[in-house]
Length: 464
Image 1 (spheres, rainbow, N blue to C red):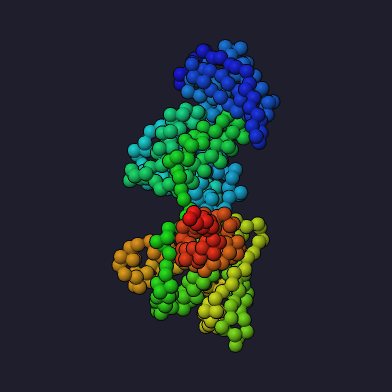
Image 2: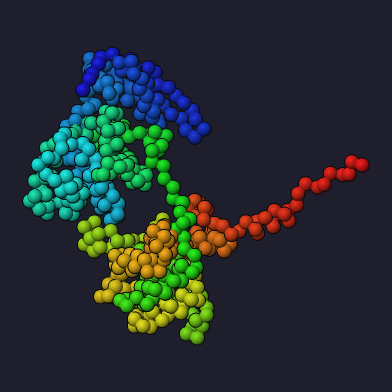
């Protein structure tokens, strides 16, 4: 830790912007300029006063951080591993299952990168598993097996202090390590972006607990250049009507549970719910027309989602977690119209299975919630059996979720107003357009006719 007494502190710089006024403390340490913006003049004056007091006491400043040595005391006294465990325990009850799992993955990657030495006496994968599945799981940590507990004790002894985040070079090293897969290749952009999003929340927690003074992670363009992602759907993943019909028909004729799975996939294709919403539906959530009106539309009421997150990440010990609809207010619902073809499929499905109003609409073999592994296996088998080899290897319908993408795109291509499609899909209009705009086609001839009908500039008068 290099320190210096070469410190100069300047007056607070006030900047009055269009939306707010910012007060920036400026100082120089060993010739390097530092700036720290604050939203209020009181905060800025308080921070500047601390710097002045440190110089008045003859305290050295850390060159790497620009801060007095005393500011490192709390972060230097706590190991990163101990802090990460503390963070997990503080946030556990506030997070859903998937958020808990993703937080554990991010903290595992950061902790591995912040070890003093490589764990040569342990298998690297065993160390990762011990951190991800036990250390950063508040429910399981107390019951960690003996071999796992031994690994975690070693990690705690060899974890660097939180103060390493005050060194910009070390921060860059950690982020590079987190962005690299085990095989040495760069991780996917969405994975890198998720790591940074979670780390930013962790750093804000450290600041609130006065363990760190500022967020050490890169900001602005420096933070986003390497992690650009797009939520736009790949047009190649969409299925045409013939492909969808062939896939659904193959699933219907599948010997084991084919008819039940056919009703599930038909619901995804005709109404576009998320898979975790479809598996949560009850029979009473389907509004069917009269028995003699199977040529009429049905209606689905969607109000709950049960994503599959793993039993170790839920408070109930169940694989699925019951939640409200994604991006909607607590208790919110939405209704989606179902094509007459789906009316006939669902009526027959309910009759064949002998389902009652309170039963799950789509069940596994033992009457429980339909498992994601069963869904994915059936869909993969259907693609392999129906599609040509080159199509099977392509993105076309590769994921179960592509049924939803295909339906929402078809609604837009059929001219359904985006606001209505967004309502049926459970999205906002901006998200819908950002996701599916590239896939909307087939409307160019009609648009050209409208432009022609609007007319053009009048012809100039004959000069002769």
